Image (cartoon, rainbow over all chains, first blue to last red; front, side, top):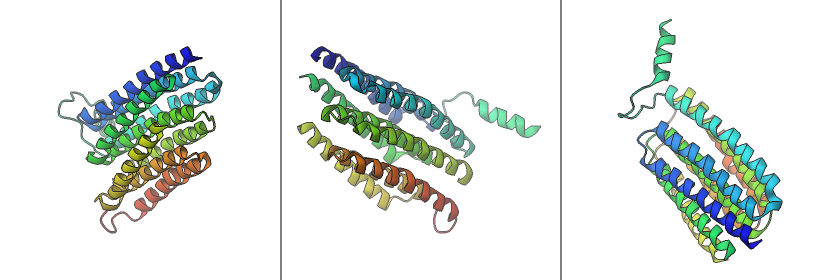
Length: 113
Length: 86
Length: 83
């Protein structure tokens, strides 16, 4: 019982460190799309680790936690993708350091035809 | 002792939420704020699960499920607004 | 449970700050999202106060439905005042 609590706490601290990493990336990244990448992938993994730690510590809650994890894994990339597409269509500029923009090339090519 | 590790994890998650709030305040465009709002929602799902563990009540996880659903809905609505409106 | 006390104080500070942002920011869409953040944080505070049903209702109405309706209205009235 106590050992499970300690293992779950360690896993939860690892997940919380990923959440902290996501927030640092959210502050330091140069434009919207990089921030979106940092803010979506790291938080998805961090939340899965956090909920896994809680599930290790209290095993009776695992079905509901699995529902929560499946929901986060399904919805978080979709919302990020839709938001990135909308931001690109609305004309939010890329950073100066970015080297390629395939969606703009594709839209330009589709507009020429 | 056993809950101390969870309290440390919750403190780190709260610190992450405060850092995300900085981007929410200074974000120059609307998609920046929406990304920060999404990150804050996911961090608060973690914090709600932690509160459920510390309080020992499984019913609190239902609120976290509602949070996940509504974060998705809100981001979709704002994305539609950004794409058609601006 | 002094962790819950510290958490409540921090969340109340965040709630006050985002409510101020919702009142005084220039961009209308940012104020709508800040108002959504207020009810997000209020919902966590209700959860700490051991009221999960109120927290669920607050999250559904405040953070979901009112944000959707505000953006719908904002799309309709755009170009009117300063949006």
